[in-house]
Amino acid sequence: MDSTMQHTPLLISSLLRFGTTVFAEQKVITWTGEGARELTYAEVGQRAAQLAHALRKLGIDGDQRVGTFMWNNAEHLITYLAVPSMGAVLHALNIRLFPPQIVYVATHADDRIVIVDNTLAKPFSGLLAHLPGVQHVIVNGSIDDETRAALEAPEHVVAVHDWDALLEGEPTAYDWPEDLDENSASSMCYTSGTTGNPKGVAYSHRSNYLHAVTAALALGAKQGDRLLVVVPLFHANAWGFPYLAMAVGASLIMPDRFLQAAPLAAMIEREKVTFGAGVPTIWNDLLSYLETNPADLSTCRGLVVGGAAAPPAMMKAFQEEHGITIIHAWGMTEMSPIGTVAIPPTTVEPGSDEYWRYAAAQGRLVVGVEGRLVGPDDSIAPWDGESVGELEVRGPWITRSYYANGRESDVDRMEMESKFHDGWLRTGDVGTLSEDAFLVLTDRAKDVIKSGGEWISSVDLENAIMAHPDVREASVVGVPDDRWGERPLASVVLRAGSPTTVEDVREWLAGRLPKWMLPERWAVIDEVPKTSVGKFDKKVLRKRYAEGELEVQTLA
Ligand code: AMP
Image 1 (cartoon, rainbow, N blue to C red):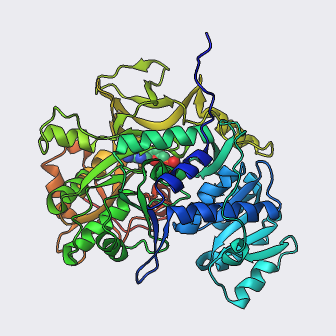
Image 2 (tube, protein in one colour; image 1 turned 30 degrees about the horizontal axis):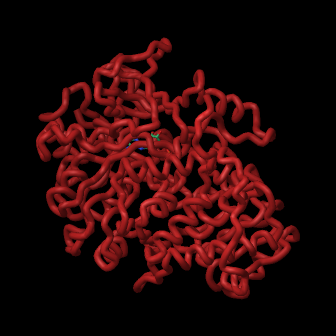
Image 3 (tube, protein in one colour; image 1 turned 45 degrees about the horizontal axis):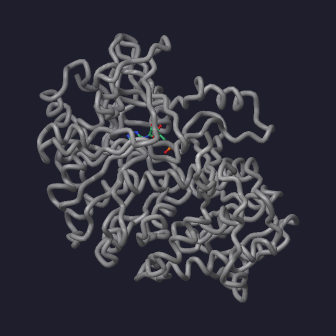
């Protein structure tokens, strides 16, 4: 029997129209260093229309790709809304990738036009000569003559435009196409989480729409919220924030290039942020900064932390010292990205040990995401909180393949295929699921340490070491060991000025962990190397160790 319901497609343009009219008074606020500039959502809607008209005139047609090379700011939000709404595909480029990788992804995605922030125009001009498909560059903000000349130099560049001049005079309304297929691509992100070349994911209008609404529900975002989006708009679909803000009527606070603890504290205080999103390292830095630079963060009720494991010590410190609840979440670029959100059951006493066990877990599967744990022999492990397996997932905002244009190498193609298993996405993450659907990750499949037949979770060790009051950051990797096959190496950043040594940390740890888990190899470092999206970069630590660059102390 056919349903009697209308077949209204779920489109980004509906979110754009809804957010910018129904919540016309909400704002996008972009930090400028000294203060902030503001646009209402009504103005955002008008500029999105102007941008769409301008892009059409520059030849954007069908599902052609429009790239961005930008920080989080109002113009990036406008592009996030306008490009998919007109039927084209948004490709937010990760500005922190190595130049050859940026060239690879922009070429692979076939980006035609790239919108660039003025503060990034110089580095972008160095890449442009290697991007023959890019015909137009639009610069947000003013640039000097030298940078303009560098952008105009490659023969394939038809013209370099100024954002304001390009939009000026264009109509402030646009007849957004309503006949788009909700399953057609709206936007893309590449993930460099794997070996080989980065892999592209093409989100659809439908997946983005459903993800935005579910993410808002699962995270508890609400009308009038002031959301500080530290997660870059190029990382994992910006965790859905631009679209969920339109859906619930929340304002967005965009930090632009001011991502250090001091400006973030100022933004939270001055812009009365109620909720924020970012990777753990950002918030860990903020926490250390607040120790000596008090700020009034009383408006902020929560921060969603994901992309890497949130250290429990950091979560407790935010709660106890600042009254801010850290909401731990887990996801992947391939999942739009949200898969789990750690909100303890209401039956659990807040602040109890049980509460913290739930809060520190990666979280409970959100509605729409199905998970299963697969053992090495392809058996399915039970949801008992103990049996360990690789997590596989499926659902309406989880990719069913990587984007291929037919020009991939054999190695890339094999790798792309190996990530899917009977219609499920293999996450590469290893852990347990409890009866009530809470995921606890013990490791990435490739990061678990196998020592004399016992598995050691690098995440457990890192969390235990980072619970020491004088440790700022710690990263643990497995290194070859003659006797045990592999043993953990702990690289530790000690709090500035503290007299604590790694011997002290090891001794402290000895009272808390079984002996076989205690690392013998320790290195004191100035900073844990980070990936392009701010996660601990274990590849770099392994390489430094292998090349003898780390000063390692052996403690027994
Ligand atoms: P990306 O798509 O680059 O954000 O990488 C996704 C990967 O980040 C996941 O497969 C996990 O390995 C890791 N990750 C994301 N969130 C968490 C979390 N809350 N705890 C531990 N690892 C995480």
